[in-house]
Image (cartoon, rainbow, N blue to C red):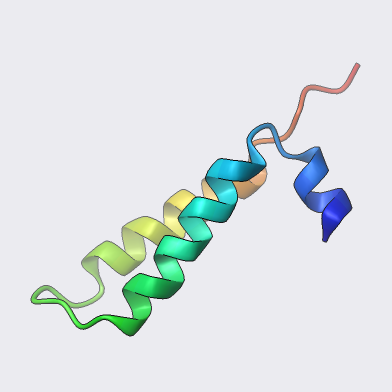
Length: 54
């Protein structure tokens, strides 16, 4: 897990987005699944944003 986070360009943003996704899944909202979907896509996008290989 640590090597995965070290390979990301901004691991702090990834961890923040993942934490927000977990919190959002636990809190009920008026429009179901809209913000969960957007946060899941954001978390996935940040997980694919790797450091450039030298």
